[in-house]
Length: 113
Image 1: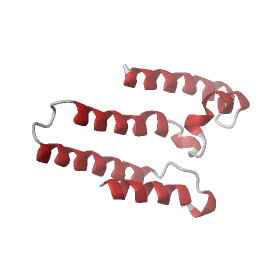
Image 2: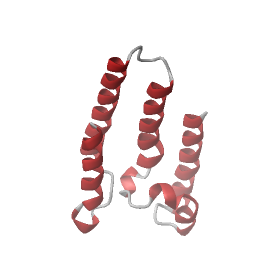
Image 3: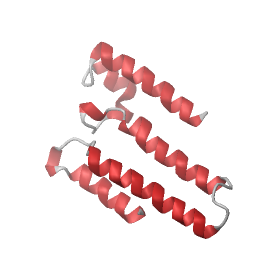
Image 4: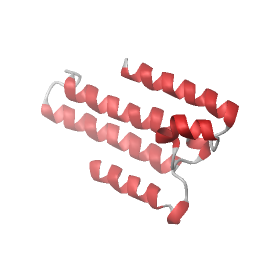
């Protein structure tokens, strides 16, 4: 149900963006928490990619998907690598201050990897 909630918020945000645009006052007031600081082309990044990352990590942690500790660590590394590669390929944050937000996110994802 958590992923469904994220999809629902994403659909509402997409409708608002179609009506008012990303910089629109109503869009920023309703969904600014999710889309502020992101490139307009990547407004969905926080709602879909980062939430999926958290959901997958939580599923691995709380389920018996990986039977032992070594397998669980391996799955954590694989998930971390996938989302690090996705971030490096997408560079979703705005390029203010010399791309500082993208670099900070990259460092954080590399530390987790």
